[in-house]
Image (cartoon, rainbow, N blue to C red; front, side, top):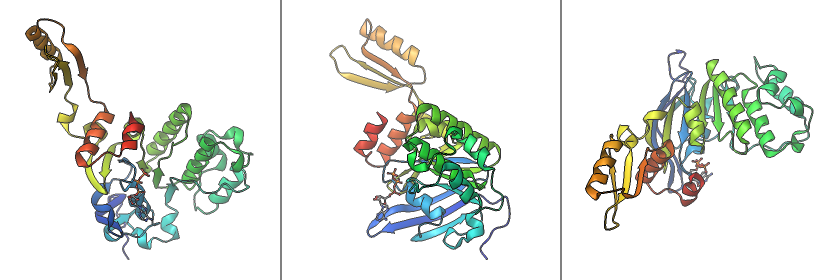
Length: 299
Ligand SMILES: Nc1ncnc2c1ncn2[C@@H]1O[C@H](COP(=O)(O)OP(=O)(O)OP(=O)(O)O)[C@@H](O)[C@H]1O
């Protein structure tokens, strides 16, 4: 048996994880622990290896190398009992079929030993008015809510959310965050991938940034990139128009001294306090090239 029975063991333990597709290493030597009850956000540009890593943890893909346990079990050998302890919201939803929201949830609830109430889950994802509507007739964002509902119906110990709020309107995203916080409050461990950095900041206890299959940083969200990444940046132009920039913990005093030296208001003056997005893009840029569409998407 490879089960680890101790509750003190991390929910997810990854050592030297690797996945090759031919010559391409989609996941390249990743080490990571996710503690029980933690919400961990996995960030990274398109094609970085997030879904591949998550699908290995879910038992949907075989790894090329390394060691993994999820809730104490090797996902490559996890049986139905183990699967019933997971909640999975995949990136792409399955075909809707002809069932109503309520029928679909009631059907899936039967696979779990201790499911949540169907109506409770429908309310939690804000689909009360659509409970008797066929899923095929729902909008994209409403279908995504059904995916989330299916992910939580089994009262999972560990919930995987792969880009869960893609297609949500802003209000639905806020409601979803509220739902995730209540699941977290109940002790659910959550592994989230998202391209929305505000979502990672709202929900994540820690985040990891993956670029080209490698985990380039793991830290509490407000410490990503290290302390230096948060030092304010001052930009201005010299008297001859040359662009200048400097990082300083004391931007007010620094700007005053630049103004004094120039004998007046500096041209093009900006004081930038790096946002999470700036820090993330710096991390990704330093680790490799940022895919152009990623930069555009974040602009
Ligand atoms: N079945 C497959 N066969 C060959 N290559 C694959 C396969 N699945 C993924 N890849 C490659 O592995 C790399 C990682 O892909 P993955 O889907 O894990 O990225 P991702 O970080 O989830 O991206 P996104 O943000 O776009 O969802 C990419 O280069 C991708 O082209």
